Length: 241
Image: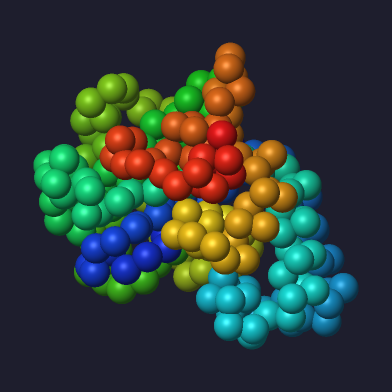
């Protein structure tokens, strides 16, 4: 069994860049991830029950030494990372059927993630489940609708029989997997938006991102942009080859 922990970054109701992604971990590797996380926090005297969030790192609420150690831990952890970056402004102009409303945007991001997770499960000959940070009742209902459609109808490109039916929702402050996903997704979104601390961390963690098994390609696999036609700055092209 593989678990895909999913989180988001960006205000989906306000347009702009919205990121959805997370980490996949095999059930037998979960104890190792938990051990690495807890030992890293303990080494920096951070209470295990106190939640770690990207915005705390940005605002100085997490000591820089601990932030550095956490991303070093993630760079060596037994995880596979995925992030979908949706440009809502460009998407609504080119693909209004996919990014026309906040619900459409979330469903599209979840579709891309589910497809990539299913490819991993196929390669591993395994099944998996998706765990998402529970927010508010309305948001959770939107998640369940999007996921129910995916498990029933599949995507325009594939069916998803290896993903266990039902979406598992839980509070992030009780989940190491969801806290790791928050760091991965928000870091990647920060790097995509422009110069910031996310770029340095992302370069360290890139080896954990999924790549095409035949070509080793990162773009479109571990990091998926939509729409793909949006021009990128030269610095971003170098960061995401």
